[in-house]
Length: 256
Image (cartoon, rainbow, N blue to C red; front, side, top):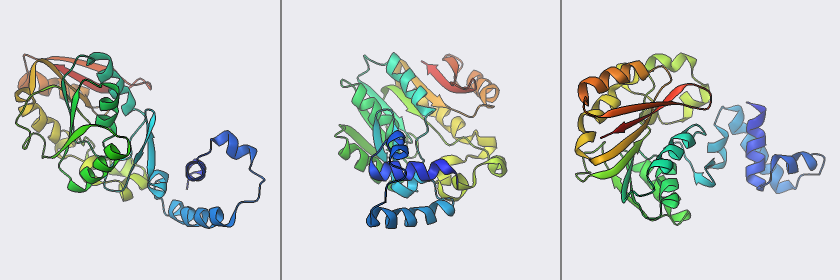
């Protein structure tokens, strides 16, 4: 169990900042809080991610419900959302494909009030979480169960997606908590993590308006493979790669 996991659980349960927690570190803990913390600690000791322990995770300026049916939103993905927001202020329609908790699509809907956002996922369980988050945050979004574009015949001004891109070969270097508790359907892909990108690139051109764009997150070592794939599958499109704040190539924009 990482020490900051207990901090996260306690500050989230109490709705306190970490500074306030430190300030009151010597206070006597109410019995109900202590009982809850003991139950939480047992889960943390079992490597349950703290976000699943409390059922909440932050993303941008909001908190999102999370369960083991959806990935925990990552801070790094906020950079991809910021890129979309900087480009798409005039967009009328957008798609968050593989939405999971809905964090990406709901954040975009809240910051692009003139854009009709559609959230899709192949997992019905994930979509239930996304719907609950949309309701809790009063986000006006459409939710569709779909395997990639199978149930989405229309075109969009932009598509954003965080596809599964981890190779099964990388399991040995991943956190135990991620392997044990986060949904493998949303983490792993065949063909060295590239299988879903190949399927996505095969059809995305039929679902983006001319002049539109697709935004993707990928593994830090996958840029060369994606460049080769795009040169064959979408030779007329323009690809722009960006690095994350840690300096790793992690984001891609495909302009049509």
